[in-house]
Amino acid sequence: MSDKIWTKAEVLALQKNNPEEYTKHRTEILDQMSRGLIK
Image (cartoon, rainbow, N blue to C red; front, top):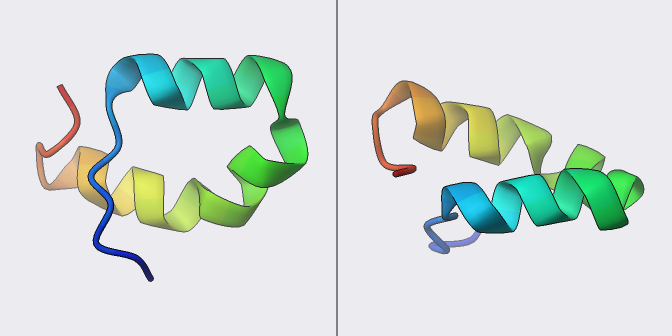
């Protein structure tokens, strides 16, 4: 787990351009979303 806070734009770009990288970070991203960190 990195300390990177994802932005909405980064997440969307990752989903679109690099699905396997998105999958790798998916849990972390969903966790940050659930904690309201992704704007």
